[in-house]
Length: 510
Image 1 (cartoon, helix red, strand yellow):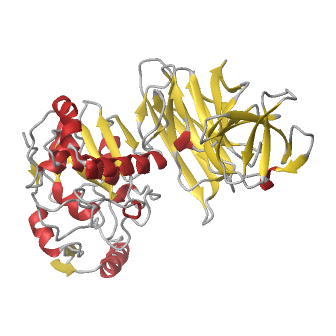
Image 2 (cartoon, helix red, strand yellow):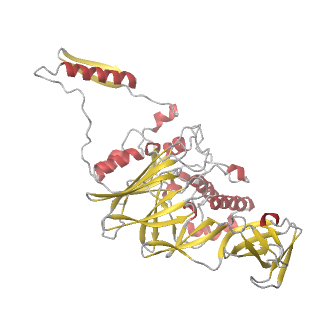
Image 3 (cartoon, helix red, strand yellow):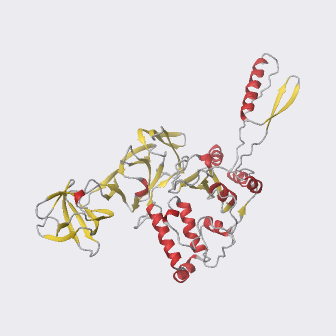
């Protein structure tokens, strides 16, 4: 069944695109002579009128009757059902800022998390209701970068509410496509070969839609309410197969163009960190400030806030705060350098930890871990590296870290939480992240085994090799791609010691 598409106030807005609509504000000026109604059409005039009213009120303060001209609007308390009715029947676009204010003012708990590229936010309310918000931009600014670096809550607009799609907000405010016919694709035509240049600015949502568009063209149905709703809006979409049926038929349904496009899309998603290889249970989840989480195991949820004050170079201070009933505990850091005031959730062996990312002034990023128990935030230590590469499998966390061993090759380091502290696991062999290189020396002889004087294979100029890993002390394992033969090279800083005793600089070898 196709999802209901919410239009409501959108028809009028659609006819005028993104042009701003300023509503005339009526202000009632009460005076001792009677009532006068004044219409104001801009904020400056309104401000002047308010100042004038305040002056008049002050001048009449000696009178027996004083007229209160400035009244603050205090929203009436509302339960969750009332708020949901208010949002679903609103005649204006609902922003994340509005929803959070309504929830916080009425003591209603929620949990929100961004996707990895930051343009989408999923919120779950205390009764299980799901809301999806998308970051919206002006048409001139949209999708110049695949990663959203503006977490302004007023720029996230409600796109899906309890499995009902606000199609106008998604297409015109998020995609900024005002005149796209209903039978057009959201992005490129996936019946034609895609090019890598078509994909580099696309974010996680864009790439997911484009990849699933290939399946939708053959009638695959989607359990994901969002994907189901956006494809159901297209006249060309004819759902035929449930997921399991389509998977069984996929080989015979897809053609060479489909397979080529899928390969390219998966590579792009993997390269941006949206898809991970390996058997990781989870990754860091970017949290919405104000979210409620059960952190200390007492059965009650705590509210988490985080913020950052920064300059144009992203240098500044940040604050992480946990509100537990009437008690508030916080930590503050100074001299951090990061583009966003991000806080992440890490779940290790069912224990929940808060993680703050610091990208550092150069290539020295760190992930700072905190636990919460007995009403206190406790610093647990740091993991070197970026948040988008850290993954968690069981009780082991792993991350790519640049090493000074043989031309700064990135290696995979592993960590565990031991006695409340993040501790690195020492390994005999550290796997490199599949780095390839081309031999530039005329010939390069490798050791057969590390520490063995017996020479191994000899590489020639132009050979393609893969740097498999090493002990980060002395030895590095190298594979010749053409034959899969392996051999060891002895490393001392930037110097390489060959089996014949010659010492050469590593940058002259590869």
